[in-house]
Amino acid sequence: MPTKTLIAFGTVALLTAHLGRARQTFTFTVPATSNVFAAGQTSAFSGTLPPYVSFAAGSVEAITVEAVGKVTLGAGEPYSGPHGIAFYDGTNLSSINGISGLIDADLGFFLTGVFLDNSAPSGAGPSILDFTGKEDFTDLHPIVAQSFYVGNGFTGTTAQLFIPPARATRLFLGIADGCVLDGGGPPGCYLDNVGDFLVSVTLHPATAAK
Image (cartoon, rainbow, N blue to C red; front, top):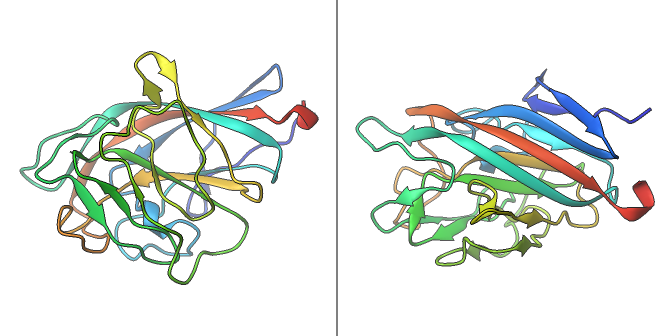
């Protein structure tokens, strides 16, 4: 019998599992207050803990994501779908809590992910990825604790492949937000965010796990 995968908002498990042909698909909401930079912590320094999917290390070859919905990051700000919208000078967030910051000079308000292992992240964090003009990738290979652009999960009509690092056991999804998105500051200011994304995450098993 397949092992159930956990999707959690902090300590509350909210999961819908569809098992078939060794793939597992989970559908859940990502509130606009979900602070992806609080992933792996027991409490969020701003907003709320992000939801996550857990799996055994090495058991997943690739992950696909499909996201819809709208969020706004503050009163008076425009609403955006998971792909993000043009926003001033975009997003330029520094690292915090052992998780890397994130740069996209074109977009803000987009769905963001980070892979973690079983430990809580700490320290300076890995190098910061810059997705400016690079949102339409076919596959992405981030390292543990390196935040990354997810968007709606597609390049055109082709599903993007997110490749878990070897020791990863969790994928967290949330929003990249800061009090000054374009000024190179730290993440924060999540509490005035409104809306949510509806997300489906499919785990494609490694060959040995089929």
